[in-house]
Length: 450
Image 1 (cartoon, rainbow, N blue to C red):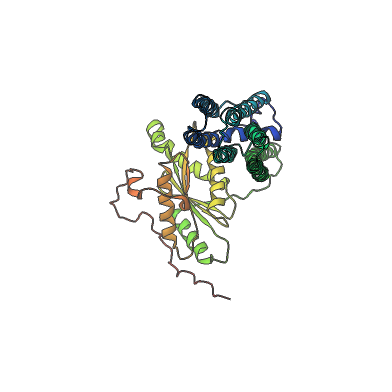
Image 2 (cartoon, helix red, strand yellow):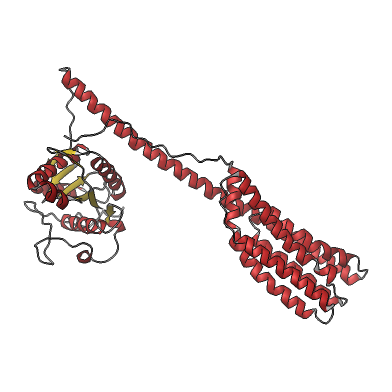
């Protein structure tokens, strides 16, 4: 009988040290995502300043033009450097500091570009239009990098376009006044598009965070379900022991039968012949004791044989009555799981693996075992021999992976011969699994179209 601990298993996860509101979590995620777009847009905007300065070199004082170009380059370098920071945003203070930091550096870049109409405003009307178009292009370009932060966009646009509107509006010329109106209309349109894009982007970030939190809750609930099942199993066992000690007739609990290899083959052939594409599927799984050779070397053949038999009965106690387990050549078992696809069978096998690897088997002394599993589900036109062969290949690949359960649908990589070296005396190409004492049946006919 397995020796199990009656202590309650803890499935609680550690709580975060700080509690952030949903709005703060969304802002933190936006601050993490905004760094790369800002670096890209500033790298695009800086060449615009160089091109504009080259075009204005004959219409503006070279000293003032150089000053303006230096301010723009310095602010661009500062913003690019700050955008590369990745501080931990796990407290309210760190989130607020990072937000203010990004808004301030973006505003600094907008102010540097906005000094152009103040210190490098050309006298020629065409050059003024060129400067205005350049500033509007910068707002459009860098504004894309601030799509997740509304405050950063306005910190960029207001100091950048404000001086331009003032200079064009106070120039006194009709062409400059008309240009100011056109730029104002373009700016309003850009702001409206930005607000819509900002709302959509922030909503996507919020949905992403909510989905992540829901996934964590689902995982915790799964852990609680497993813990409750283990506690119920312990409670039932204690109740059976109490009834046995008090001479109370205990209710007979049916367990899945432990079959021989021939009986397993016959059962597999029967359920395969009765299954059609319109009915529920079934799954075949192969299990191996991963450390069986080490157990043989340490405890001897007799202990390993008793362990193999006892573990087969224990695996059968973990299954439903309509399922079955068979002991193949040690250290391998075969499982037949009815009414289950590969995903359902994988969950059942994971539950069995956890119980086996946490329940020492009493074979004169407690021994813990580790399992490796491969599973395949029923497919139309696939015979039982091929199903067992597929589960064999899935089992072989599970030996090379950190995940101990491998389904045929997820199998990949090299052929089976290069997955795991075994001491099997059979020559290459010999079929390992043969359905003995089982009459091969014809493949079920495809359903007729209605």
